[in-house]
Image (tube, rainbow, N blue to C red; front, top):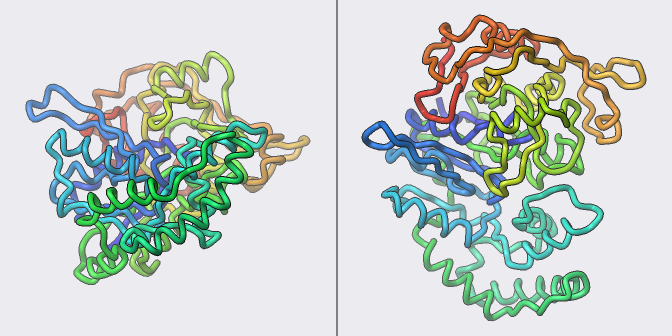
Length: 429
């Protein structure tokens, strides 16, 4: 094995952090390939006495950092928030997890600047808001593709940094003063702040593409970790209600600087039901007591923002599309235990619009907002699964549910999660 890619197969929040943490035990490198501090990957770590556990939410550093033999890479496809990164490093140091020699940051990663966060906030107050986290991710990617972005490597040359900052602030101060009525940002203070950041991260910065390709040559095991989910991909998601990068498997190669010929397998992480944060179409959304039960049983509140997530039944139409776009060969199903208390469970197996059944997943929002889900009904198992440790010991109806899902998706189920802890992970042989 050279490279495995982990993708979220829905709208994000599928539980990728736990799956990456589990897989990291048997790999050498975990590399994050896109997104920014808008991600929230939750990992539950047992204590040394095995009785207590701690929950950690990572926003930028890959989830493999909790395994001391693993090197973690933040690739060139990530947009880096210095404040969030340093807070994360300090949090890890406080609990005895060292990052020195174990964390590498691409010198080509773009930086989130103070004006990016302000511009994001302005947009989300207007009538065009899409429900972003407001962390400056979108504006940073705009600058990247406008070729006006500031990269980590630019911190090394004060003159280059000053020139780029002055140009960007001339454009953004005018816009912000009109929309925000705020005091103008100062070039010198930003330069001082970011050069201080450069001193702190200098030991981590390197050419991560060269590092990863050399690791591949040496047959090291690499796990590529995406953020968000495939249905939020800027090209293949429910545009414009998407993120600003490519969480799909194709984004891993461009976001890390590795060739697609090195990818051996692609694993999709699938929640046993559906959730979505922010605005945008959601065919199986439940705005009723059932939706509230899913939210409360599943603790469906954003790890980054704390916002309540929209909840609904599992949507196999969108999942089948996601499997095709990503080339998903096997899936990890998470949060199965959330369905333990439901006597009846629905699964969306098709869409109808104007009385006609659609054969493909429509990514244009006008069509997707107008579809009606076609449901298949399953009997619930109404028995606790959080204590189950072998797949064969799951209730019969739970296994029927899982196996029906995999038949529709024409893929294999490889892992089932029945809780947040590491030991609540069932491997399907």
